[in-house]
Image (cartoon, rainbow, N blue to C red; front, side, top):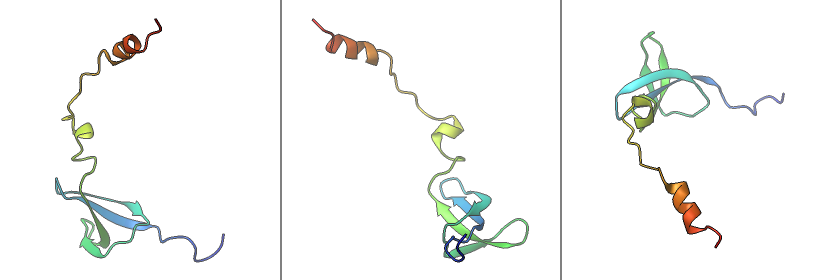
Length: 81
């Protein structure tokens, strides 16, 4: 591999702003802010608007839309006569 062409892959804290949930993972994303984590170390901080902790699909609060009959309506509309 060529030296100095790969981004720095390091531990980063992602913080969900809508639910104040944070998790530590590894990433190459650049960060301007840092935060002190539970283990006492300081890590780069990335603030996100939504994560799996607040997304309706993962929290079970997703509203289901009635999709029944769409295929039947399509077939009726474009059926050969």
